[in-house]
Image 1 (cartoon, rainbow, N blue to C red):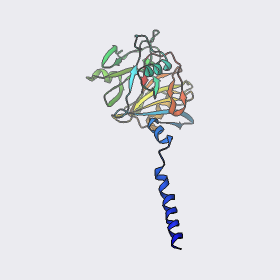
Image 2: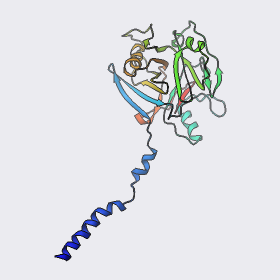
Image 3: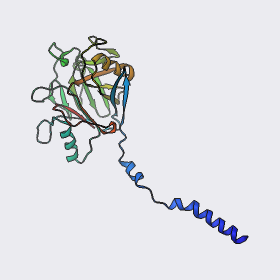
Image 4: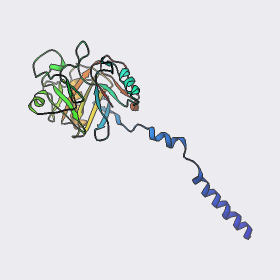
Length: 257
């Protein structure tokens, strides 16, 4: 009987101790490579949108226009290639404003604290860019803002990065006054809004949407006091986390994370 009890005790010890000797599985090491970028697809007003949340206290965001030779990058594929050449991985990319025929930025563009293109003061003109009020998205360090062009000109701002576009979508919690509910002017659209001094949200529609619904998404669903339209029709995004891997385009300025 004593021998039987000893055998049972040894067997119990063996069964409980063995798992602690098992080395970590491969999934434990691969977890360190997992992209923790916060993003989601949301449905609003019977339409779907891909949404990316960026916290500048943790995420390294920049604007890009030209490659190392000085030529416009133009496509998200070239932006991804630039990251790879620098030993980095592109987690999120998107076109970031309107441009001229030579793919130079239309309106204010600041990169690494240098003004590349000057700001265009508020004035009437053809196209969405001149649908007043238009605005500026800018950031420095861990803080960012979206404001109207007029507000930008009234402030003393030293931004590390800035891009001018238009129209504004949300202005101090109010929709742009010219947007019409039920408008048939539909396009794929992308834009940026500010949730807090440190947190941004980038959105691109999955289907064609009018400006009213797009702006209401930023105001009602994402609670952005200010938001700016970046572009439409040609807009694309590289967002592997949501299986959106568009690498085309013929853009001017782009966002890279």
